[in-house]
Image 1 (cartoon, rainbow, N blue to C red):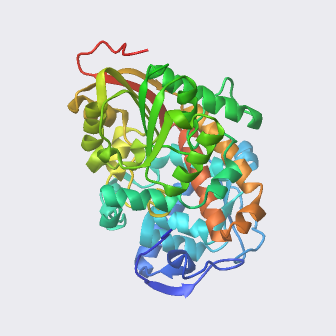
Image 2 (cartoon, rainbow, N blue to C red):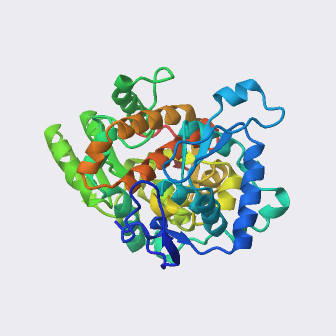
Length: 444
């Protein structure tokens, strides 16, 4: 996995406790170049924004030190002083310098480097996500292009690029995902009976989510089902148990290999074929097409091709069932061409669509949305359960060959995602689509 290939514009090695490996994490191990003026402007903006938010800031006495309690701000209520999440800056100079050079990418890399921490990481990130439009003064938002990086061309989700992008995340290690997912190995939002959720409810909630998607698609005995994005095979297994004949496609070799073993162990190998294939390479017509949280990896440039492929793969009377993460349309437009911390380190090449974009692109391809239901609170709970399992066993992560910088990156990714749903910045939706003009009943 190539975690960073940007040119070395470093000045010095940084990082509390053990420093990041400069070969594996070049942009974390070394501070970026940033002018004193740019850093000072970043400090002014960041400090001004943070003092307006319901959180506290503490400054440590250097890397790894115990932070000094912050003095309460004038007029700060006791409840805020006592219970608000705290941002502890171990290295304020490095923190502001990274933000001055790289914006929110720098914010994430500063966490990976150990230059800041929080006593409530999800709470802190939820505050920031809730007030995302207030962090930068309105006149300065027009200058976003001066610090926001453009997405690298190498991350475009062409057929070859999509293979590389998927492998950089999903081929990390099956054992890594096994550490924090439930036994169904389902890496998408669950659907719980009650919230808040308990760990022992996760597998049943994942099955409930899958079953509702299969119901939306009308999957039953004899259904010819195409799944775009295999994961580790749980949806294909449950569809085959209903009597469907399943073709499921993936670009991840690691997932394909484990999915084949799990399908064989479930006794449904005769009903399920797993192929390494891009959605643009699939042929044939299917009674049902299901795709779970895969559209986020497609990229806006290729949404027309994606929905056109879905329409072309449907047999007469067929249904498409999608599960998709969404964000508000204005936020989607603001980030569409921006290289973010998530796109650099976690999900290269993708973009979370808005509900408006889903409706527009599906309609242009000749598909009508006949069911649309959101359940973002359930994703927040799913992510919480994953994050708690991940952070509870750092030794197991280390044993797989992932270092401390990776652990901090993955913890921030899970917490950042959870915060997005808790702040209602993100949602997750299940949709049913049918060919324009059809009644939407489809085969049963």
